[in-house]
Length: 254
Image (tube, rainbow, N blue to C red; front, side, top):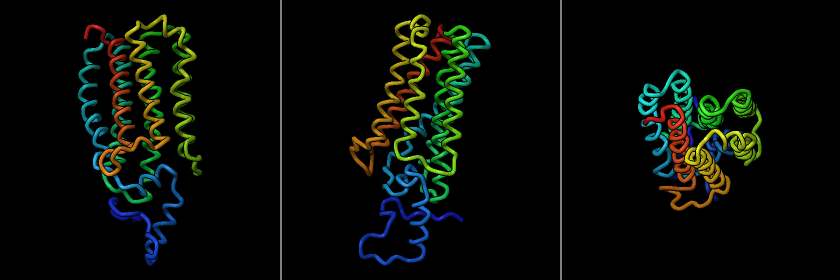
């Protein structure tokens, strides 16, 4: 049975002068063994809006994806949209589960790693429509190899038994996400101005959100809508922009 942390509206650690019992010592030992992300999730009060945006977005993504895949042009278009919307639903849905309730300390660690894994999956699933529908071989294969290979490396690193220092995973996310700059000349030739704006606008939204998470600022209303909720807004905006790009490539008549 997992060790369940205290109620999220109370401190996860005994305050000064409180008597430490065996249960508290056990809880603290478990928490100290967790990754920085999992510890933050347990130690901070959970804002009332935590997880709501991603839950709503995940629920909207599934039917939207089904409809858009069905209306895409040709097998490649349907495949590209299926890959994109599957990645989006997995990322948003996993995040929604992580933030759905107060999990035990051991469960939080597993869920946080699953959440980070889903973020890594979203990188190549976002790039796949561009590679399949806009770029020509061999450039399209190089792009797919870079983003899928990089995501695989990140996922393996995420599930290693040790925890990387705080900020390292964010740096890996940003590095993998912007590695597509290698292919800017080919993308400029293959995409029109509006599509380029959607591509880089989505990247900017992800980057802005990652910087907010790294700095933990701004944190406007920690018990209602904090810095992590700003990150979730940025993610939803980025997914929407990249979805619009994917649809413009796969179903331009829409």
